[in-house]
Length: 344
Ligand SMILES: [Zn+2]
Ligand SMILES: [Zn+2]
Figure 1 (cartoon, protein in one colour):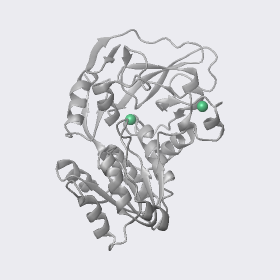
Figure 2 (cartoon, rainbow, N blue to C red):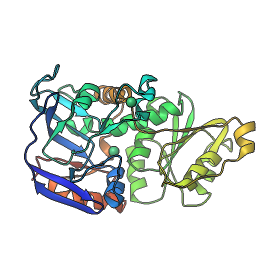
Figure 3 (cartoon, rainbow, N blue to C red):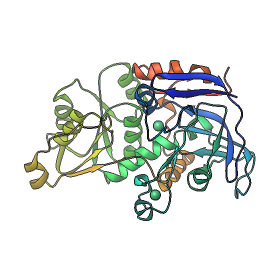
Figure 4 (tube, rainbow, N blue to C red):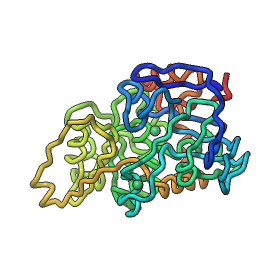
């Protein structure tokens, strides 16, 4: 089969690899749709010892497809089943897992290999994070389950409810998914992004009130302005930049919640206004990754059509063009690129 193989930072190779055989407890999925992700761009640039501990490894982590082979001892799956697989599997036994916070699992198993024609899913993933799809849900939409589950996690952490005003700073794919989910819950959503074609594209999709902001204090001013000066009920950073974390804290109103959704570079820190945090009872929460329950919730939102993320796909390419696709992502010229292995 053809696959895009990660050899280390900056080293992605398009290669011929053997089609994986399913080991005991494994299933092999024929991939029909994979999606590029901002994380891919980061990982390709600097590597990721947790997500990709061993190289070479087939790259990519957002995928949907059809079961092609079933390994010994697998119950409940047969050839031809349509599935989506998350990119990690919790252990189910550690303290975090027992508390239902599997996203914080001390032994989270990450799975890569969306940019290939086939992938073997390990037993733990098969047991926890592979979800069946109905015949009517196209693979290209189902492949959103993983990032959508992350966005759902962020919105849950922010305890977003109907009638609230939610400010999302950052209009990348995850900022957009966060906005979609918050809107689906009945919130008024203000999405802040840099002016340019990407913001215009998102505005045209109609997923939120899009506000163009340049750097510095502008996002805070825009969010305050749009809420009559009181600030938003929930402010979400979807950029992973410490200065934006601070903007999110400045933009939230009394009693509000700030969700630190974007992961910042190691070693960075932010300043918290202690007066506001105390007297205005701000809630400051991190949000990371997803749980098996969130992945299932994401699939049902996609199945029911409550969340339709199709418009976030700005390009469709074949497996051989993943490098070019990630280049477009890095330059901010694509939101999400759909990779179809069947495309020549
Ligand atoms: Zn992703
Ligand atoms: Zn665990």
